[in-house]
Length: 500
Ligand code: ZN
Image (cartoon, rainbow, N blue to C red):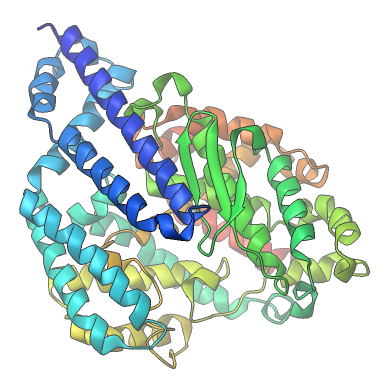
């Protein structure tokens, strides 16, 4: 078999697997949106069969054989060419899938499912005692997984790499440590206009059908194509890229809190814009897939925060908001702008503002890194959590459910996931600063409701690149600089200190 033939086999094999994955995504989307109540058991069975088929295909030994025929051949000479990119990422995925013994994979899947189920019940009851043994089991399995995957420095590294290719605990800490210090200082200086805005403006009431219309209009205006997507309602909003021409989003509405649905919609639409901007001709191969969670999150955060919470955005949108919502008919733009940008340390990560959000992430990263190293035991986690919370945000949770038990991630075995949120914020600011330098006067454009140039820029520089470059290489190519917290900090200082 020639390298060319081996490559064709790999292409066909992975494309077919990608179709199965895309079917699974569609079933999962339906499971969270419109499935009739009695359909859940059958849906779970469908998903389990698909997961098994996908796993069998991902670990097919022929992948290894064909990869070794292609690696080192002329086909992959150009490292940025589609063939080389695909072979590089197929190899990585194959190694990950085959290094984990089947027993361990099964045990992990089961422990994650159990952990999540127990967490869902235990969290509202503030019941750490019941949850703790499940988390202990998961942590021990994650350590086994780290051993199976192998690492040079510490067990956290291979787990992190599963979510954010190329990162290590040390590389993340190098960015997070200065970020943390700078954020702590910045927090001290936030002026009263942002610390104590009039929040009653956001309480409406905002009738749901008006909100939905307004959200759809905003998503459309930034470039989300409803002929290639949908906006539905779920308790936990998400976005899913089913395939070319099909990237769906969900949101949730609160009649008495405007930001929830609106910024949630912009966030998920940002994810969807990335999915819809991937190069269609490479669909089903790494060259056509999103590069990482952090880069994905950079796209959602960019539209949600850097665009959606900016003053020029609302200079353009506020007249429409006043017309749409009787509760805002007399409202003042400046007051509204400050209300949607309140900065105040809070207990819950998902409700945190732009300044304090990353502090929540930094301490979660430090805790899970220590757990994996064995420097921290699960039984000590609640206390360690509260100590960090006090140190970083000056607050002590009144109970477990608003503290160590607030996030689903650990209960589902997602150790190493949290850093991608903060890295996403940093990438977003660094990309945005470059876009502003390249395009000029983004503010004026936003105020006029013109978002197409920015989207076009993102499509060209980021979306169309798929997984061509690893995240750190991508940011270096697009911005000419290494990833750093500095553009993000500059953005925050400019927004909250200089332009009060
Ligand atoms: Zn997101």
